[in-house]
Length: 196
Image (cartoon, rainbow, N blue to C red; front, top):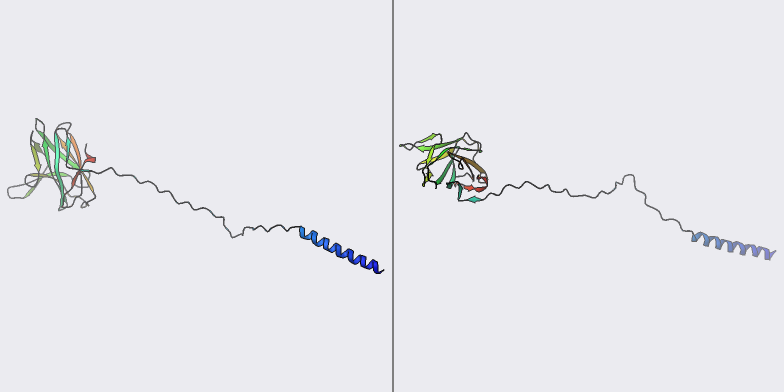
């Protein structure tokens, strides 16, 4: 009887050890993280691509502009009393006289006129009509006759471009487009990108 009891105890002990070993060999699967209901998926941030800006035409000041037999030089602007006075010289290298018959400007104003002084020094405005003698230079200055862009809506800044078109009698000088940079009392420069 004692042997039977001992046999049962040994049997149970061996069975328990075997069961524990079998159970230990079975691996529990690793826990997989489940997304939380409040977790949002990560979206990569992409920087916006800069839109290229239009490039303004090159603005190169020049000393003179030539069209046909005519050369415009020594040009400057002076802002005074809501007007832009235009001073310049026009050389006519041709063999016949030319005539400056008009001018205009895209700068907001009431138009372009010719200005001169009477014997008392008082300024007089008139339509543009100036003979450009062959082989000579005509100066548009305060000592003689000059051009005026009248009643400009705002005083130009130094960075502004003021276009002026001069109209002549004959082709190829029918129209000469020039432009000025600036507009303060220090004057301005001819810009060659506006010439034709």
